[in-house]
Length: 247
Figure 1 (cartoon, rainbow, N blue to C red):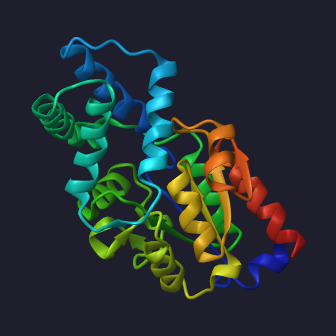
Figure 2 (figure 1 turned 180 degrees about the vertical axis):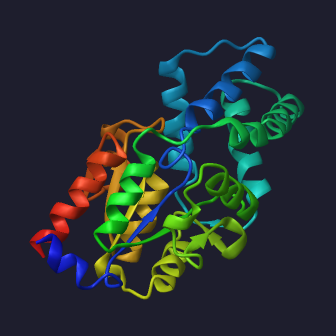
């Protein structure tokens, strides 16, 4: 079955989200929020953070226009307001959180199975790409730093700077698929957030939800209806290969 895949290396694509999917960054973003809330005298439990996360999922499920700063600011600002901060304090809270985002990209490691998963998919003949709401600089610096840039099709690296509408709009994902010279019906999208799965569903691809970010399996299924949910890139890779082998 593997040999059948290898004979047509350009007919299938696997597109990845970045944060919480290829790099272990979401916990660091979570720590930024918690530490800055504490500086404002607000102490939050994991359960309360999950409730806030669900509130944000509901608020930001509609496609966002391409303004990375505005999107990130609104997320942090809404967290501050949801926790009871006044308008001005919520603004300061959001700006403080944003100022620390760059350090997350500098320090976040890739997941232990990232490189091996990319290598295996490449050997099976899949074209690989990335679709992220992060900036192009953040995307390129991250994959260069971790030595995984060469696994991806150079034109299938889609950031928020390359689209008019951010995820959950499928625009960026469709651009990555097109760059891989294939079609949605032969493609897969892997992500850790409902916005990733919603984008993939709208694009007409198989969607794999990961629990490697901050979102549980039940929340992923409730808000986005992925084709499957797994706990690691290694499991996602096995699922894709097995699914493709059955085609």
